[in-house]
Image 1 (cartoon, rainbow, N blue to C red):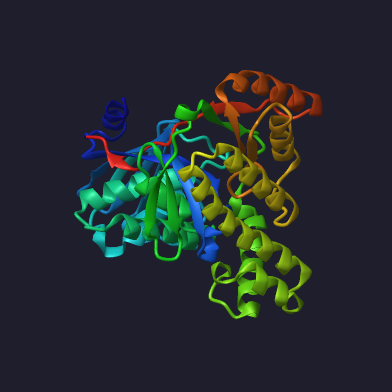
Image 2: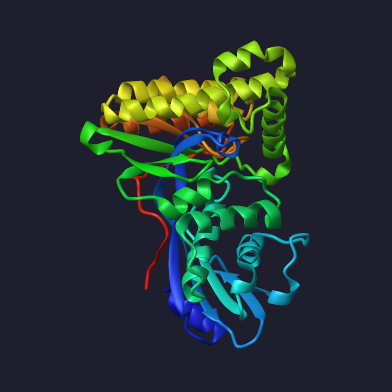
Length: 376
């Protein structure tokens, strides 16, 4: 269908169609830009991109969700200082490829990852485009190089100071596994995440409280972490232990200490989760998730009423553990359940949201899925 829409819109057939997934971060939140360890997995929801080269330098972009709109610019007008909407994520990737992109492009995307839900729809879009351009122009970039390129596009072109986690898992994920990622050197280990064999599911609760990482809250948290690392004399908070943090507390403002405490502890929680998963100890995994939520709520202060209600209600309805995910200030939460307890918990969470006057949440689950790929 994407191919026929592309042909009808642009008058030519696409040369390549690619896909890239959104993600859920199991554990390790707001630590990727601190060079920490994270453990996300790709979800089944994906964004597709169909692209064809042009004979001139014009760039035309549209989406299946808004086929009546075509954004037009050219290779010679790309600027990281300009205004724009969602198309800037695409233009940023083209810009980040630099001189490797030698012709104009027709691009049609089909976004299948929920927007504003904390599932990294932006990285799915960037990585579907990056994968296509890497093949179309024979750029020869490795997956870590593509992840860095897509991150640069979002940092410098769009203006969101995101870390490297979302792009890395969108590109490198393998079905059935979570991705243990060292955000300093992008080395990875595939960690089996077989919830089904244990009779468990990970519920994703989209609170539908919209979050936007360009509103400043995310950037403020990152700046606090970088300031704390500088005062502690380390390259990044990944290089700090809790013992060192506590002994050096006088060097930091109270706010910097709170932010740093979350980061250092959440990096440790990643390693604890890996150990628990390797032992199939899902009770401990659930407990770790809940500790992470409490830290994100109280120490990093990026939760919100909807996220707290989702997690608290899940815990009150037999969840083994849960937490908010993503940049914060809205978006989604995850909660680990025995399969038999999923449906009653959904009803309880929906009722709690209705009683609080919140928008009705959306629920879905996903097995760990594969990363970006060419689909033709």
